[in-house]
View 1 (tube, rainbow, N blue to C red):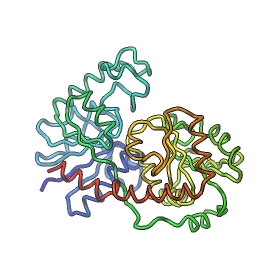
View 2: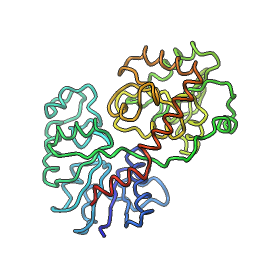
View 3: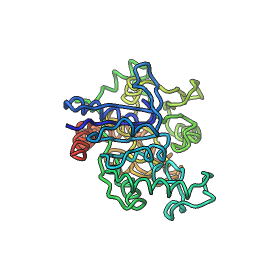
View 4: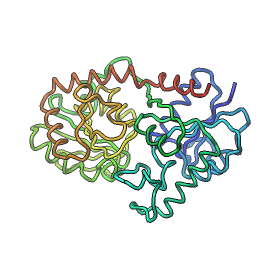
Length: 357
């Protein structure tokens, strides 16, 4: 049986690394021989870090290399021996572009990237051509967690892309809101909004710089409301907005269980792990309808979607949810049940096992 070698850029941080590590765990539970590698170690028990250009040197002819992320796609692909079994999961568009993680509002992406790049990436056109040429040499099996990303990749590469939604461990039962609030010292009657992103208020793709302004507008219309902004590098309080740094997943899960709505004004997303974490805690999500987000959230069924970038619509929708506890509970319950059916870790692992075969 082939050895599965799963590789990511960072050991732990970021959605791609989380998916990679969860997939390792699920495959090992099925008695598959799985090895995890990364380019930047972040914990004492991390596997030995390796440079992107050296990833191919560790491969035996029968191994399956499953790539999730890297600091240098060109170096990694150029270092792969020919006729190896390679799977690539596209967690963003960096492999397909001349520099953009997501080609946000970029007409040039559809035409092969241009120089000068509208977003300032040097030699974007040549870099994109180089990466696509390397892809054609390697001929990997491509996967993406959303149809949105798959369509983008198929258009850019001419290669077929299999859609395998991200998955996470799913609890059997909905976490108890009252217990989570008691543990965190939150009043039972408070109306709680939650912003979360890696980088917190500095997370440009998640509208982090606008969180405070959005919350000020929302909270003026919802008496007794409180919000948490999680994921940055500082801890402070700005009125009824509590700013928390990065927290461990267990703490974040309790905070999600205690909250009433995840306020997620993302400007670009593929298949958000934060949304999945919220659904697993029966927390309804309010988001801009961008990228693969509509493939996760059923509008008015498991959460609310508003037009991309429409701050007024976002504020009005947030107010409507925070002012209606019965509705938020029902949306959250729906999100938990539908997410359990669609986005469990075991379902993701089964999709990749089929792809490996």
